[in-house]
Amino acid sequence: MHRRWSLAVLALLAAGLVAELGVLLFWPPDGQVVGPDPVRAAEFFTPAQIARAADYRGPQFALYLVGTALQLLALTLVLLRPPRLLRRLTGADQAGEGARRPLLRAA
Image 1 (tube, helix red, strand yellow):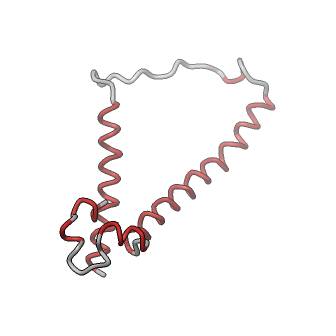
Image 2 (image 1 turned 60 degrees about the horizontal axis):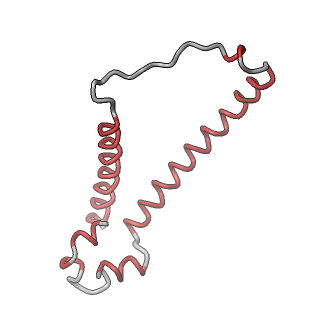
């Protein structure tokens, strides 16, 4: 069981590392990030539209947090208790079979 937890932590760290690598790859080469121009929302939207946008923002952030938590939970569950099909594909059902395919087993 300890090994499975180690693999789960390693997979989560790898996912975070890949995300950070994506940020570095898409960062502007000169490091200069162009900021937004100052704009007053009231110049383009009615007060009712601005209030509606503020009401919309709160639940959307909550949905984002719940979605992210569910994705992390699903990843952890797949790592700790792989589905039968995944075990069969990686050869984990057969003793020693997973050692012959380490990259597929790590996926």
